[in-house]
Image 1: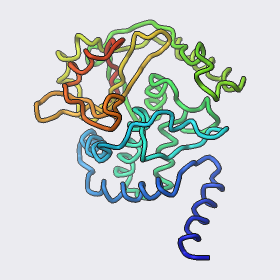
Image 2: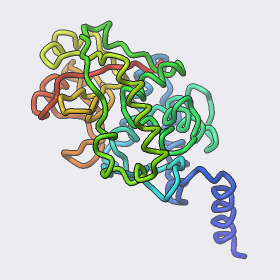
Image 3: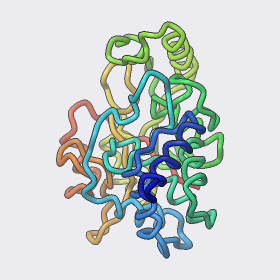
Image 4: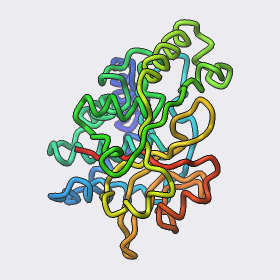
Length: 279
């Protein structure tokens, strides 16, 4: 067997044994390249580390639904196409690796699983943190982030979060009755709490309280939804907070040309932001 073919055989065998990881050889190589790219980016201020790592993804294409693969839920590693949430998750996973002084693939996938799934355990489709407010709350319980929205002027909003449950046909995995029932249970739990957000018209006045590296979630007035988009705060040369994100406008990872407060005014149905700080 030629060495190159042997590599692919070993790689595929490793993934098969893991059973719950989906990662192409191309993305495995992208992981190795990223480890080299982020070397020496660790800073004393963790938020600055998050932004520096985030900017190594600049121009990576925006691709939707990269996690909807196969018939059963697996931990998808895709570094060639990112949506807004997988961008944040991958950046945070690599940032944690630097702090942990780790560089191996297993540590990366463990971080990614911890971030992406309820209580860090992959147990089917419903264990993924689909709603971003659920993502924040669960990662807060893991002490990975802290929701600081209330601290920077946020106000409470009582709103039913039920978009997945009321739009079942949009989500192929919800054709399964067990998955559907578990998503309804997640929504029921979320609806026991109020949503706290910083209104759009208060962002500029409170912008000084937002740090580079904070995770920004865009709250929405759309019925049944909590958040429509997410990214990372970055204070740019103009002294203003901008959004580093996988953009559906340019269809790639970029820093918003406009400051966040002005950028949001152009987003239909946006009511403000939810801010969580990586710990």
